[in-house]
Each structure stands twice: as C-alpha cells, then as structure tokens.
Amino acid sequence: GAPHGPAGPRCGPGVVVLAAPEDVAALAGCTRAAGLVIRSGARIDTAPLGALAAIDGDLAIGPTIAVDEVRLDGLTSIGGALRVERDGALTGLYLPRLQRAGRIEIAGNYALATVAMPQLAQVSGDLAITDDTALGLYDASALAQVGGALTIASVPKLSLVMLPHLGSAGSVRIERAPALPPEVAAALHAAAR
Image (tube, rainbow, N blue to C red):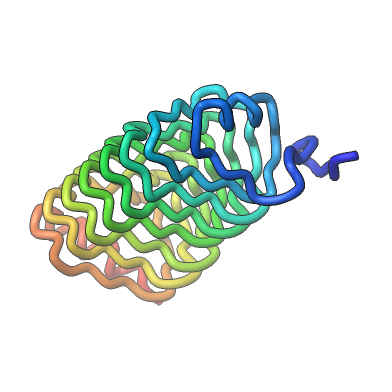
C-alpha cells in the first residue's frame, strides 16, 4: 500500500507531473505527495487539489504558458523547495495555509502580480524573489524566520511586501526594486543576522 504519514496517504510512488487537466483529476483527493511539478502548455486548474496538505520534496511551477493562477488551499508544508519559474501567463500564486518550506525561489515570471502565503512562518533555507517584472504584492505576513538569504531583486513594480514579523534572516539583499518603500527595505535589512 501507499506510505502513510501525519497528513494521510501519499499519492503516487514519486514526483507527480501535472501537464494536462486529466493529471489534476488523477491527483484530486490526495493529501500527500512526494513532489509535484506543474509544467504545461495547457490551461490547468489546481482547485481540485484542495485536499493536498503536504509535499515531502519540491513543488515546481513552471515553465507554463497557459496557467494563469495556482491555488493550493490545503497545502501546509513543502519539505523541499517551492520553485516558481518561467511562467508566462501566471498572475497569481495563492497558498493560504502554507506554514513551512525548505526554500523558496520565485523567478522570471513575467505576468505574476500577486504571491500570497499569509500563514508561512518559516523558510529553512533561502527566499529569493527575482526577475518578476509584474510582481506588485508579496504577502508572507506570518513569516518570522528565513534560515538562509533573503533576496529581492529586479522587481520593478514590487511596492507591497508584507513581512511584518520577520525577525531573522541569514542575510538580506535588495536591489533593483524601485517601488519598494525605503522604510520597508530598512526593516527587512534589520532582520539580517
């Protein structure tokens, strides 16, 4: 049978790749995955994956060209990395219950305007938001600790970074973020150990 853990049965023997709507249907109802990759030229709706609570490895989103929103309402933990890279049409990433991630990399997404993970409390490794030309809002309002480097770079429209509880980060680098208010940048720099 499938291995069981605190989040319930793990679906699939390894990393699951979502490339078509039928792949989403096959994963619907699963509560745990070894890893998840969303890589497609097709339009994919992730709403049926609301039961998915844990990803033991990585969650990789991209490259995609027709996925405009990724919403995983039940996801609470990502053991590995959250990588959101090279998504042409993605405008919103919504992970409302995510509490922990090993590492976060959000890079090279031309339409991504909103990233919301309001319950994220801890990132064990690095948190990097780079080369996202349309990004205006990053909400991780519960985030208290970044174990590695916090990097915000080449995000010309990023004006709202909600990290009011960030108490520590291995290092902080902010560059080419002209819309970011100076007081927000100063508060983020103050979190560096």
